Image 1 (cartoon, helix red, strand yellow):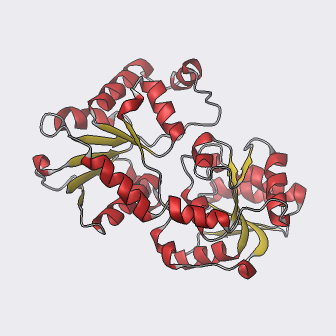
Image 2 (spheres, helix red, strand yellow):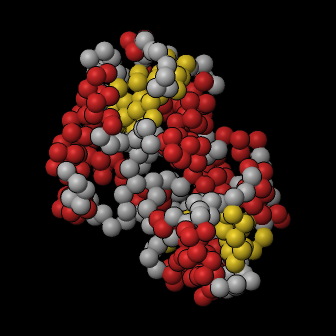
Image 3 (tube, one colour):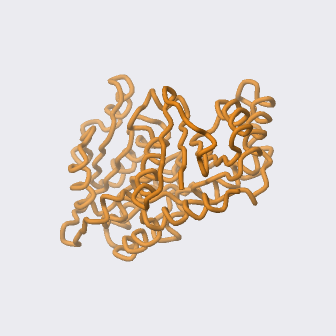
Length: 337
């Protein structure tokens, strides 16, 4: 089997830190381990498009329209991963969604063009049931063309174990912490109000972007900011942290939380439908707009009043392993005619 992977052009700005790129690269690696040829398409390369059993596009937007229009004349075995992260305010009512999208310039023509491109694809590959419903509703696509393929936790964690006695009473958060959608300011407010130890790691952004976070912390000794950490340092944090919190305002899946859960962390996740689907109730779901909801959930997990480990780690290991995801992908590609 031979598959082409095409990623949206804007990935050249964020490079390796881009989540969509990470998803495509991860899938390429696990499929190559199964003996499948995956070509990561480069704009400077030359390709025999007819030779591919499937051409998989990652990302959505107007860029897909021209590509699909041209490609479908040569090889119509096209798969699209739209990768959309709707906010929790969406109620699945068309009027709500269209009100949001209407703020986009050229709304009507944009939606029509992308919908037309989606309809030319053989399959829309989504990460969650929520993403499927959102895309189907906005672009008026039949749910029959969707295939749900959940993301896998970091494959390198397969060989790593954790023990209960390594765990320490602190809450960990890893992300691009300066991004508003990660909701770090409310997480900080929760740590200040409830007094739990909070460790923040990840990209701090520029000095200007980090300024609000620095001011919010106000020198509190229970809150520390590590900034960017190496892979080994991140694993060490997963081993030690009793709780991992991801109270995002907008999130598709939240792979860092899956990785943390695999390494034995209790998880406090945003109540956005997409990310919480991955846990099936084996975590604390928080209202990302409510500091008390965030704080009370983290405190309950730190105190052991709510406990989901080690059941959660075993569940993640089985449900979201590279083996399970590879099987899902292979079935999807084989079904394309």
